[in-house]
Length: 107
Image (cartoon, rainbow, N blue to C red; front, side, top):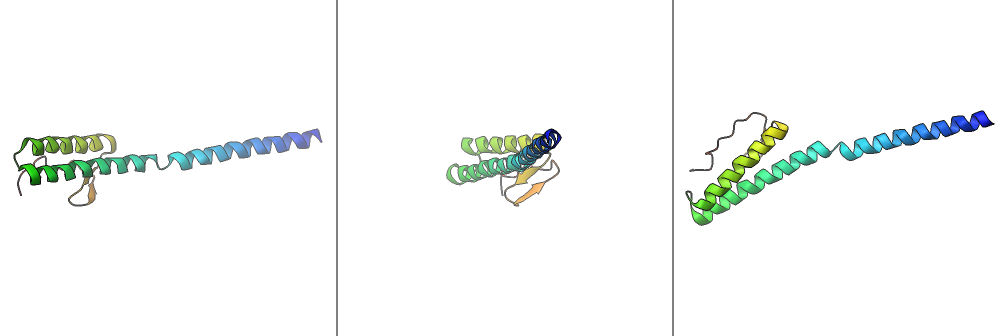
């Protein structure tokens, strides 16, 4: 009887450990995607603010230049972390560092 109790206790310990590992994988498995989504959101915000600044203050305004700088910084941050960046105007990810820092200067 004592051997059966030890075996069943060992089984439950292993099952609990396996459940904990699975819960960890499920909880943290989406973390890289969530961070990339944050990257996409930050680039989209900077791009939107740049378009607003251009519309309200003009192409060469101080506000537009500020948001060009912020957009450049967000693209760099994404590239350094994930080796990809979000193109808000094209609605797609780029896997090469091929953005143009002057893509919002004049149309």
